[in-house]
Length: 388
Image (cartoon, rainbow, N blue to C red):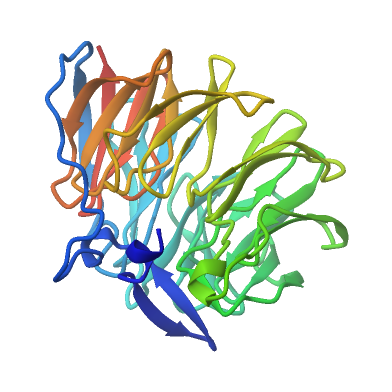
């Protein structure tokens, strides 16, 4: 692990260092833990492309992770160079397109209650009308926003790379409250997507390995728990970012951390209801009584829910920088840094289908709705796939 991490690019940002998780930079002169070669397999399902659309320059060249969002019958996507699209989920037809001049979109896309939301590298959250694409307001935050802003219709919450959680008024973008944490000496480049519970609380994970809950309307603190505890002598050994997207699952929230744990917490009290040691910078999904996660080494793992029993582990995609798992029907889908989408059986984890969506790779999380997969490639290809 430490051998591989020492090859990562370290960037200086606001007094702390940030680890770049771009796999293309990991194997420059000496290949340590190179990506696994794809093996032939007997395909059991076919991935058929229903439609595709070009969304600007996609993730751009700065290693962003701009995941689209589905809200109702529409999907919204954004590119690093300032293009925001609203498309019909069924057909891929463009409903509207908005272009932001001289803006770098670094965090996107959030949607809800008639709004579409993006965060910029210039420390702004920008809100658009979900039905027309008209810009509604811009709200200033403390620094770059790398994850999708979220809204409940009253506030818009965004997490910034300087360790702050900022709430803006959903009506005009004015500041409502701010929650601050202390950053460790070294962090991964990224932040997780905060969630707003139906009870009106915001839950977010931070680079110091903590998960916090505050009231959405006024930011009053409710609880704080650790996902991971830093260990080791060197700063790079003590990186414990909680960057994986959180997932609400009834009255619990699923969370993961790098060089830490995957865990489930009670949303009301923060009480730990399940956990096991694992290292992941992606979110979890669930199905067939299991919880699924992608480890930092590219292993896709199924764990029996509420236990530490590992049901199966797929190591075929080792070090291929796979996305977090997305469940669909009887299957799980992940994508990798060469742009392949892999379909695995939920029963035993074997690969049963594969297709390539984008030659430049896929970093954004895979979405699912109506029995289809929605994949956003790094170069800007947004594709709807059906499993047959």
